[in-house]
Length: 513
Image 1 (tube, rainbow, N blue to C red):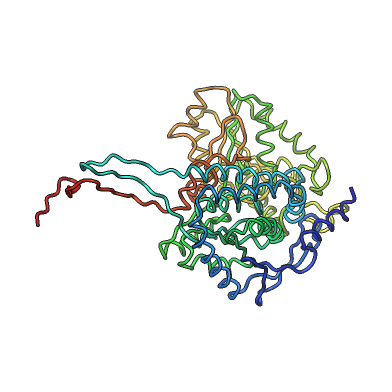
Image 2: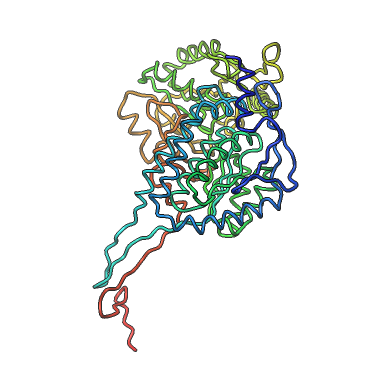
């Protein structure tokens, strides 16, 4: 395959090879927004320019989204599901091309880029089925001739602010579910990945126009300080789903809470894998290595800490070093590459700073921890993934560095392992590798893992869409995608019906007139 020509052809087919409007609300427009460049972390090349959304663009998008919502909420949920099903089918047709754009823009391997789009397709299938399962409850009433029940009503125009590391799938987790619930959605993608969002929205646009449905999906691009703050402060937006860093998420949460709005927050993950001396070591090695290296350590579910039983510590770490020494680092578009670039130079600097910080606190670098330069890497942002022997009380260990750093600890008892595991302020994903049912039970007990996701004999990374995704503590407490996460995109009404000929009151209260 002529990679250069193929890439150029894909960008041209999506109209992404030149300047692009970064605002969509039924049509593409720009009213004075700044121009930003989409830069590939693979080689530092500029893929295209994007005109971001201005204040005027935002007002246009909000008004059109509100108009679309008023129409969409009247559409029966199963018919809403039909739209999402057709969007999923269109994504199937475009999976290869969209996956390539993901890989180009954020540096994912071909497999991971394709997986990003497959996840959107899976969510579309899930949401289609969900459109016929928005169930309420019938509740026993204490009063004669009364019935209590629940109704679920759409919220309105909700916003999704997504991160660069999953530049399209996280949008679908929220948007497809919100859509079958009857909401309209405004998407603000990361400024590091605007092309992926534009390409996805052009696919969605085709389907909506073909089916003559309300324009419920909109796009605004730009900085968090301009567009993100506007969304957070706008009382017309009842819910914001934000994926990103803890400090930014905290700021958004405070602004939204001050106006009594809702948030779904998917923030930092400082995820750990406990490796028991009773583990299947082949599974454990693969699980820890994939969790630590996938997406170059730039997943919120990346394995950042390995807590290894002292009996197997030396042997396990020795084999991990062998894996790290043999892993192929480089152009993610090349077959066989496992670790691609970090997103930008700032990410490399934070990686190197964390390495220095760990060493200053007494950590020992067993492998990696360097920037890679030279022929074949161009102006890309490559590093050698690091293995660091560490102390769980180190400040650096308690912070999330969005890069491939794996801290290694020894433990003696399961109680000690869980204490180390739960000692960080983040609480997203966790795992244990063991064949002992008692250890598994302890890990899954009330005093076990304090994370939103708990995995047994599989790694911290790679969550399926059917389960509710999210974490505890500073991770934010939100839940997206599967299970009953749909309830977050709706408002609950408790309905009381009196079908009798008298008016009995609750709690036997008497009121005579």
